[in-house]
Structure formats: C-alpha cells, structure tokens
Length: 193
Image (cartoon, rainbow, N blue to C red; front, side, top):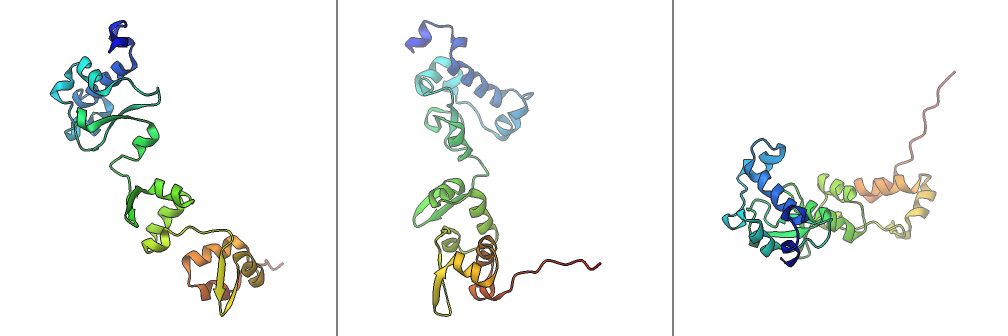
C-alpha cells in the first residue's frame, strides 16, 4: 500500500469502494440496503479496516472496475470478492439466466454473442419453448432450405412464393416448413369506395 502511505486514505478510489461497500451492508437508511444488508449480506470482520481490505483487494485495475461478490448471495470477504467491470457484474446477478449447452455453461448474453445472434432473439426462442438444440442454432442469411426435393436459398424461396425474406424467416422459426412455404402471403385489405 505504498500509494496509500503517501496519500490521505480518502483520496484513494479504493477507499470509497470500501466505504460504499460497508454502507450498503450496515446503513438501514441507504436506498440499496435492502439488496445487501437487508438480505443478510455482510462485510467480514477482517474487512472492518480499510488497510486489510486494500491489502486483500489491491488497487483497482481501472476506474471502470468496482468490487464484485463472486457468489452473489455471499458476504464481502477476501475469497468472495474481485475487481470487475460493470459488464462483468451484469453477468453475475440474481436474475442472470445461465444455459448449459454442449457441456459449456454461459449466461444468455454470452451465448447470444457466441452464436452471433441478439440476446432478445435467443431469449425469445427459449421463451417460446423451442428445444435447446434448435434455439441455439443461429440463422444464417445464406440458409439453404430443402422442400419436396428442391434445395434453394431462403431468398429464392421467398421470391418464388411472393413474400419478403424476413417474413419467410419468421415463418420458419414458428411454423413447420411445409406451412411456411405453402401459405400464401396476406393480401392487403382494399377499401371499397
């Protein structure tokens, strides 16, 4: 803590992380107390001193890093805390949805990124009850579709049946292939004069 020895403790950004951590767990009047001290999260006895906290945590890697509890239900203590960015912390909340697929467990956001799709698309597929194997299969724009022995691109099928590619793609996500390719496009309502 060489840096801390030549500076007032309150000048160190780590001191304010320490201060706020303790307030979240101890100060009933704090707005976020209910999510910390109010649900039993405590600061270990050893970390009642800033010097002990700083010795265990060390300096923050960057101003974007804050303290994170690895086990979100565990206390603030040396074996359960690390410096993490906001993006890393968002993956470690009580409402994070984890998926295990092909022996790998990642949060929904990380799976979507890995598969090259939006988080909302993957979440929507799972919410609609898609089997995991199908939900985790990314759609590709050069998708080839075989129907009645004919294989052609999604774009070509869309042109052939007279609907736009996005509509056909959405149909294929929801409907069996035969229904998607044989249902005529909706015709716009024409007002009579």
